[in-house]
Length: 394
Image 1 (cartoon, helix red, strand yellow):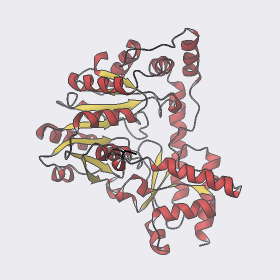
Image 2: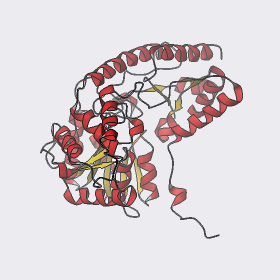
Image 3: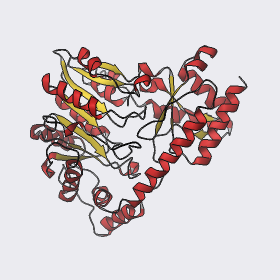
Image 4: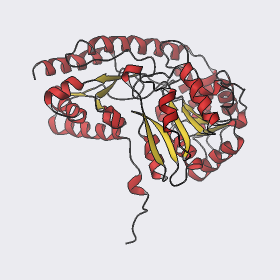
């Protein structure tokens, strides 16, 4: 039999899903129900007005192909939404609708990176940035997000990593997994470096509505950036629409927009039509349900931060965005002589709580575990009480 492509071993995966698979097998084998505190799935159902719009689209027979970049109403709504953050306003033609957020990572990196090109990627970070880069023959250049700096880096750190082979900088604010938010001052300096060195930026803004302190700032706010930036966003997190699989890319660079559309056409033809109509309602309809979700997430954040900092050997800062908590467990790891992955496995098997090791998100994650505060207050209290009791008895 002929061999597989030499590229395939370079393609990673999202290990958070592997952890869930292991947890489900543990539950099946042991009969023990775990408390899940690791997942990046919104803790609420899709708002009723959006579900009603989905059903209406089906009943109106909006069940056929659409143009690859999306229906006009949705593209216009996306352009209007992102124009509020941008140095120059976007038009519908600057948007491409895709099946979730990951395709924009895949398409943007695909459109830019040749063998040996360098991509500066935050670390710890969402693993698919690096996975796709390596799959396509690019080289990952990690830039560390430090706890001491509220999971920001410095412009000086960034400039030291830029070489003639650098082609793309990836940023994510608010961040998964740290909950950090890049400051406006830092974003302005990143923008200046991108212009100075003629670099592209992929700006993952999927958590843009989940800023708990202050307001979201996009790097496209700064001169010269709308033309060299691809914004990644979508409905999954803000509107609890993960299963709808609807996201988009936005850029003022028409050649890039054309390539995003071309790649989408080859890959998916178009996005689920009913989901597109639901997304129009999400962006243009009442935002009351979203505001209530965000208020509850902030309350759950405060609860989790308070309880975590009462656990011996664990410490964390209060995250400024998203719905994740990056928890420093270095004291526990040193005491037990284990890795964060081994600690999480022990907590699953012996305390019956599922959390994620920081190494799922990169080499600079080993001091940490990640939890998510999307769970109910009761689940948060139950899970953290179990972890505390377990660690106290080690």
